[in-house]
Image: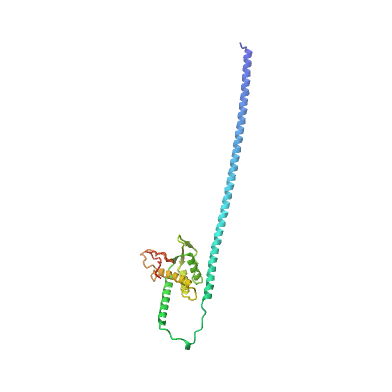
Length: 270
């Protein structure tokens, strides 16, 4: 049988043990709370450091990309400048070559030694006069248009630039558009077209030049002539619909191309 004093002592021990357990649990909870808080703070710090590293890396990549774009634009500008200088150098070289190839004037023979005119001289003069009249008509048609589009190979365009660069009215177009068939499309003003016509007329009739040069000039001249002859004397397309803007005169220097149903220049029978 348990005595009163023993029961009181047991209760005291149980209470003491309970208080000790409560204190231990409280200490454990405090320790866990502190460690969780420290882990959370460390995680947040690491997150901020990672975000800063990512932001710094992105900013560096953006700066590098911007520098690369600036360098690319500068390189493109240098390439464009070099191309213009090369075209100008080609034109100057071709000018020097043509001037060197021009025949020197020779004094007329004495009147007493002149041979009587050939019977065909009158016909030749008439043909020459006809060519001059046709040439003047083409110049007049070219002067009446705002611009025309020349479609040809880049080498052919370089030839036209070299021939016409010394002309009074030649202006080098700023934009040359390539297409998908190894050709380029160049918009030239009527004034520049006049300079090209004058240069081709001079080159194709210069017997001091090589046959290839004269044939290239003649072919280009005929293509321009064919396109301009589609215009009325006032400079408007012959088949222009009433109230519509006239289509742009297109000059194609390529015998492979046959454009039908338009006012573009079609390859003509040479």
